Length: 226
Image (cartoon, rainbow, N blue to C red):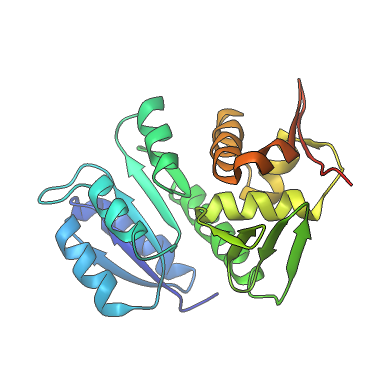
């Protein structure tokens, strides 16, 4: 994963330097932008950016606007940074396809761990593997989901979650196990992250969303009618 390009977008130069220094130490190429307009210019010019670390509050164009614009063209993983610890902000981020959400102040080491986890999962999806159950098909190499032949648009994390469910069809999965395998790091939050993603995933799957069964007090299970 070394030499992958990461775009760090924050109007605070000290914050950009802090994040850049930790990422460069791990072998990543780091590009910087001080506002949303500059971020989009760099993103479209570079073409091969592997991940964005995006601040919410910025001049010219805020992080939500940047995220919305990028999601119209790309599924590149996005980590949002914010000085506000607000559940509504977090839920809005997940609605827009944000993959991770980190409130300031944060540990740079934790941020790097989350970056590495996302990129490991991205690399793992390069395997030529197709999962299928109950009319749902997940092509991990092409990053495509189809329901009865119709393509469904999912965020990066929703895609990972669905793939994990299909890989563990019929198995009861605790929230902790899902976090450890889909998020792939020690998560310092609560079960709302899982529940929010499952809710969105069920909605996008339509009638097939019923395949994701809730196991009260534990987690979820993916089952299809034979």
